[in-house]
Amino acid sequence: MCIRDRCWRATSTPAPAATHVPALTVYFTIYRAVPMTTTTRSSYLNEAVLDAIDPVEFRTRHPYPWVNPQHFITDEGFAELLASMPDIGRFRPFFGKQRKHGQASHDRYVLDYEEGMELPRPWEDFIAELRSDVYRDFICRLLVVSSVRFRFHWHFTPSGCEVSPHCDSKGKIGSQIFYLNTDEDWQFDWGGETVILDDGGRIDPDNAPAFEDFEAAWPAETRDNRSLIFGRRGNSWHGVKRIDCPENYFRKVFIVVFEEHRPLRMAAKKFRRLLTGSELVTEKERMMY
Image (cartoon, rainbow, N blue to C red; front, side, top):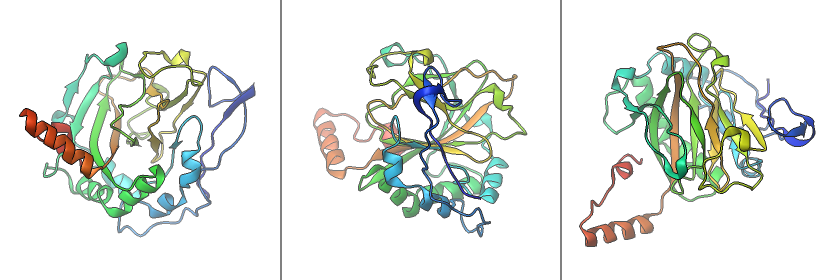
């Protein structure tokens, strides 16, 4: 079986994956063909899938760089991670926080990764691989940077919450979202897909548009060991529509945030902070790896 991801472009016939704009089916193959053979379980990352993602195809994707791979984690590794999820009792509530530009709060429960925190062994090993040169070099190739650092966090989102359309802050250069729900704990008509949004170059990032304001939308596939990788640009609008699920069910994701590592720039920041008596390393910077 081959791994493929297809993007629908807007023209004259309605495209089933996009909304708000008529579209004809035009396909962009983001992957080279890869046989879905069983990988020896020496790692969580499925290097065949990493190698199959074409950096040039990724960077030229419309409306900004994104890809929605399946089996990025080996199937056995994915099952281990699902069986050892952190308990929601460890998460902090993040609700009713006013965002910039009048955008609605992105409500959820959050658990940030910190080195040395107590975690089940599968998650320790998975994060160790994400901090390895294999994954780091992969992200550098995709985003054409020489060095990158990561932050990691889990989000559990209950019913009634959404992620309003937004562009990420300028400090980020991209993210990878791993979707952790299965048919056993989630009905996919409850929602939870990250939606890639195309504003047609019309909407300034310092705004608070609704989903209906965009020309086209591509909901990510989230079932059966999927993830979403995207690179930040000025128009990298995305969001999650309002979730409608029963009480005590949650949209579950694990997110890797990418930031370009520039040692000289960081040294200059620390020098300025030293002169002003500010804290040399911020809380967010302490969680970069």
